Image 1 (tube, rainbow, N blue to C red):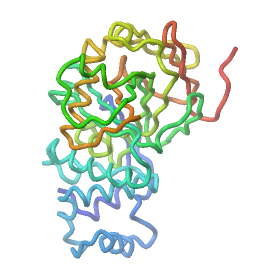
Image 2 (image 1 turned 60 degrees about the vertical axis):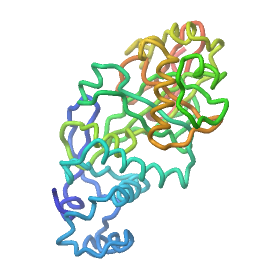
Image 3 (image 1 turned 120 degrees about the vertical axis):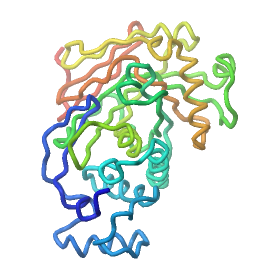
Image 4 (image 1 turned 90 degrees about the horizontal axis):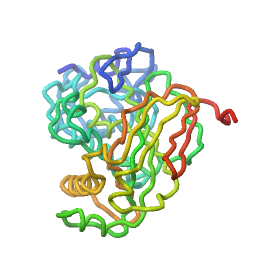
Length: 323
């Protein structure tokens, strides 16, 4: 395990979901300033820790300490520390415990918009070395309107996915046992673009434990207008095309997600309940990408849902698409 001095002094870098690292840049972690040693001691004191900096290798063995560190880095808009860099023996359960604490700190300020599942197909799961999908929380502070301009981040690539989001009619407390029971929990479904920004303090292969710890690196949520029909056939038949500057970069359809959107919705609801998270009326349940993640470089993006409508956003300064 790397020690805390290493954790706060090396140059941050970034990664992307493909596993390829991008170039490193110079940035200062949230808990550092010019008086680095003093600030480190203040940070440790604020965390309620009495360990000397020189022997702080185990300071972040506890999820709540990591949750605080990630939250501080997020609020200061600095690169996120990679848990696997300092705790290489961390398990998926450790990563989810850290995610729970990090999300709880953000929820206290922002509130919950909903929840998302991702890695819904076997090839994606195999690429990240997991045997089932993973889940994250959508925070209210991350929602932006369709047509919004999103700032690029020079430290990290951004990745956009088009999903379907189910709006819960009621609170859910018990596991859902059938697609019929699942269909009774919602009456509105919307297209949802999720944008992730995995920005870490070190280069290297992207590890699912690092992604989980930072809540799947979710940064923006954009929802479109409700779909005209929400029966199983209509949801599975949704066909989408993803454009960057009027060039198609991806296609997908509703049935690509577990072969059945209702099954994906039911799986996601049950997984969220199993994690101990609260499902309330009005929350969005996002069932995973209908296509592949699209690298969101500067430009104008539009997702067209055949015979339904469109959702769009711009990375960089706002500009209207060409007529």
